[in-house]
Amino acid sequence: MNAYLRLLSLEKEIRSATDESSLHSIMLNRLKSLIHADYLVLFKQHGGHRLTAVASSDVSGMDHNSPFVKPLEALISHRILGEPLERSKSVDLSQPVSTPLGNKNAEIPSWFKPATLLIPLIHPDGRRVGFMLVNRRLPFSPHEQTLADHIAQTMAHAWQALIPVRRQWLNTFRQHNLRWWFLGLLTISMFIPVRLSVLAPAEVVADQPELVVAPLTGVIKEVLVTPHEQVTPGQPLIRFEDTDLRNRLLLVEEELLVSEAQLLKVRQQSFLDGHSAEQIAELQARVNLKKAELSYSRELLERSTVSARQPGIAVFRDKSDWIGKPVQQGERIFYIADPGLVELQIFLTVRDAITLTPGTKVKLFLDTRPLEPLVATLTYASYDAEVTPEGILAYRLKASLRTNERGSEELPRIGLQGTAKLYGEYAPLAMYLLRRPLAYLRQWIGF
Image 1 (cartoon, rainbow, N blue to C red):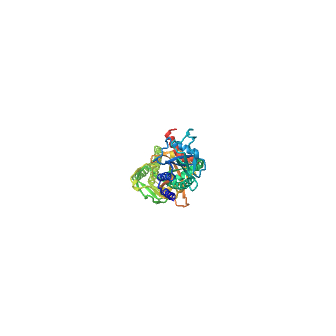
Image 2: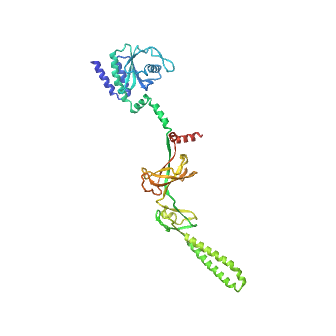
Image 3: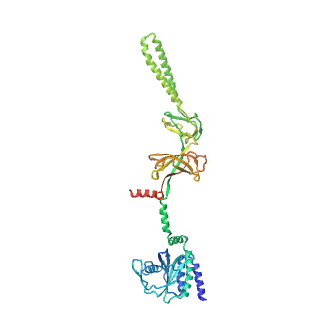
């Protein structure tokens, strides 16, 4: 009756253990007193090829480099690994055997007792998680072996329950040699063709805008439209200072009148004086020159007012930026954009460059709508790189933008920014994953 109560008490203590260290202490010291053993060693099994001593009775810690532990691990591994040992077994460790451990003979210490019992720790699911080595002077009876097997099942269940889930998964992974299957599948998967892709900053810009440039060299007097105002063809946009132009036009008109009067006078005199006829050609050329100057002055005066040639939105920041500002002929002032004609401007850095061809699919993730990607088609890729306003060397790309991925006709507003995902050619998965690390390695090594 006392043995039965002691067995129940031992099982209760085993189940109440909170960590592996306390469980090992209970397994060794309580079992030692229950079956009257002199020395016990707990081994943990790693797969089907190795045992490790994790604890022993009367010792606070295991030194795996001691001259006793390593030979004992090699000896027990050589004796029992590979055998379908499901119940406790008495073994004779008095005879040295040759082990693979450096081709040396593994021997037990001289103080080891004659009787040794090996108790397998088998989990209820059939996995062998370890062994218990029990050593004493007297042989073990069948009753003691049955008792040891019963306790071993409880120990194995409790031990496995205290191992974290991650470690259990790793142990199963090792025991069933799944790692070799995993490595094989991983190696094969590295050759799966995947499409290369890169991310680059992008901005929505106008497609085919009308550039409003200075038609003459002068000073802007007035901007006749407000920023982002809808304009129509022929609507005045900018007026230049025209005081000098008007004065010049009046002066040329007066000079033309004078030249015509002189020409008329000489023609009338030529009927009476033959010498006057010689001046007609010269005066006629002067009149023609003044007419050309008059036409040019009128054209300049007309140019002083710039009008829109196509409908759209006037895109610029502020009117005050241009009023009173001197500009050179051909200098860009602002542009007129059609909200229905937009495209993407993308700057792909040199270090991220991949092979891209016109017609490649592009996805745009706007900062304002990151969950609604827009679909675009690459239309242009610059041959040489340029320095961006941020000081980065990059290739300029353009992509036509029509609808979003959901088929909506709504187009983004000009000026919105986001991130573009560009798709390139197909390449092995290994190249997709290692392309950037290999580039850094090449730069670091310098080959």
